[in-house]
Each structure stands twice: as structure tokens, then as C-alpha cells.
Length: 379
Image 1 (cartoon, rainbow, N blue to C red):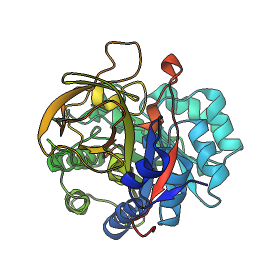
Image 2: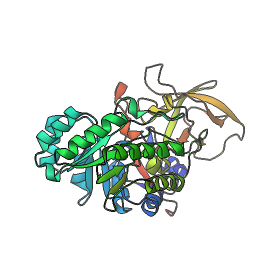
Image 3: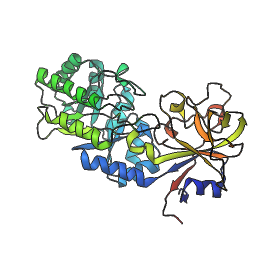
Image 4: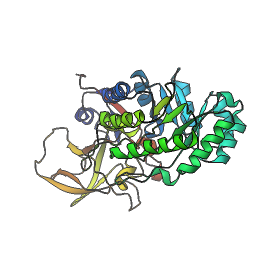
């Protein structure tokens, strides 16, 4: 059972932690989930890869998210073994034969994504009865400026090939659908509009009555230097695009929010281990909870925490180095912090709910999975 505190300041006051601490705010998870439940006209599949902590999954489940985008047997097991009535979907376009068989036979997974004919044949061979097999064909979308990761460079068939694969799966007797993913941290609404136009092109060409349409994830979060549309704005554009498509009334719509669902619900408390002028050496970095901060063109908010809560009002930029022996373990953008920050102080880095603990390594023997709950109602 996780400890509960009223604030990150209270965590520092009580624990004085010497290892990084994740601070989870469940009420924010519930708020994000409710926005999708209120505005998306279909199934909401939380992207487990984004933050697979069991407490996060349980909070989202209790908030009404009962469908999960999974990419491995481990993620499927995490969902199915701990959330009694949850549904998992195998959304990785490339899978080993053994895991397809295990997913189908042990976990009764019926929905699989493919982007190549050989993968389609592999899934059919290992799954068995095509009458209960749902195949989603993933197609490429064009790159969008500003995203953290363009996923269609690795996955997705081009539009014409996607149409061919869709017809092939349909002719083999599968229940078929289409799927796309515009890329991670997308802040441009027209990316979804253009992708849905591509869906229309494929449907006009193939005349296949699809039973599923998955608009993917990629919904961007707001950072210091990048403002994202609201969840409602994203979903309004998607609904407008869906209205133009020749979809049957029983076509099941799906989306896969990850970052936007969990990002604002978690912060990280780190400690300053050494100061060298405008360089700060902290006890977490790109090999731990902060991998995106070494690569992405976004800036995360941060603030100083001290037990007495007294520090200079004058701010200055500091470069933050992580704790490993690798000189590349440095955060890309400087952080504006009080000029009197010193060794032993703590820093709370906000908006780290996505791709943080999910990507943390044990490099140099450094790792922390300490998580506490922040509840402002706690006395």
C-alpha cells in the first residue's frame, strides 16, 4: 500500500528521500478518463506502455477505462491477471508465433494488428478460428512537425497496400478494421483530420464494410514550451472526421490515449547531489525516469522543495546532469530554479506520468520505483 501525503512538499518534510520518488495524483487520472468517456463515441483503450504501474491501471479501471492497448504478453498478463473484467487488445504490428498462441489460448485475446501479409498469415495460423478473429490493418500517416516520435517510419502499410491487406483479411473470413497512429505528442488537430480522410480513401477503394476503426493515440500534452489542444478539441475534430466516413452503425470505434491520460497525474521528486556553478547533479536522469528529457524538444516545469520552504525569489537557468557515469546523461533544456539552490535540496519535476517509470533502467545499478499518493484532502 502506497503512503499518502497532502503534497510533494509534505513528502520532502516527512521522508527526506535520498532516492527519487514518484508522486501520483489519482484524481487527475480520473479527470482525464472522464473527459474521454464523455466525449469519445467508442472504446477507450489506455496505452499500457505509457505507464504500466499497477496503481495507475487500477485507478483508470475504477474511473471507467475497461479496455487496454497492449503490446506484449507481459502487458496482456498485467491487465488480465489484475483487472478481472478488463479487455486487452494485441496492438503491436509484429509478434512472435509463440506469443500470438499464448495470447489467444491463455488470455482469449481476439484483436490483433497487422501491417504485412506475412504477419496476417502468421496470426491466422496461430490463432485458429478466423470467425472470432479481429484483424486491424495499420496504415502509415504523414509526419507532423513537433511530435516527439514519428511511428509510421517503423510501422504501417501505405494506403494502397493497406487496402489490399484489408481485402485479403476480409476474404479469409476475419472481422476487419483499420487503424492508424499519427505519432507521439501530436499537437496538430489536422493530423487526425488528414488520417481520417485516408480512411475514407481506403474505404472508397475497397468497399469493405469494416467492423472496427481505431484512431490511435498520440494526443499531445501541454508543456512549458508547447501548448496542446484540449482533449475535447482533439475529440471534436475526430468526431467531425468520423461523420464523413461511410461507417455502419455497428462499427466499433476505438482510441488509444496514453500520454494525455497520465502525464499530468505524476511528478518526480529528485535530490541535488552536487552543484558546480550553474550545473546541478541530481539522482535521476535519462537512464531512469527522465529519458524523454534527454531527447525531446519540450520543456518540463520544475520547482525547488526545502523542508523550511525558504529560498531565493531570484531564478536562474541550471543544466541538470543525471547520476550515471555517462556524460550523455544530461537533460536537454535548462531549468529555471532559485539561484541559491544547493546540495541536499529537492526538486519536483512535474508532468512525468508518461514514459518515465515505464522506461527506467538499472544502468549503473541505479533504480527507484518508490511511489506515493498525493491527496490534497490528506491532513
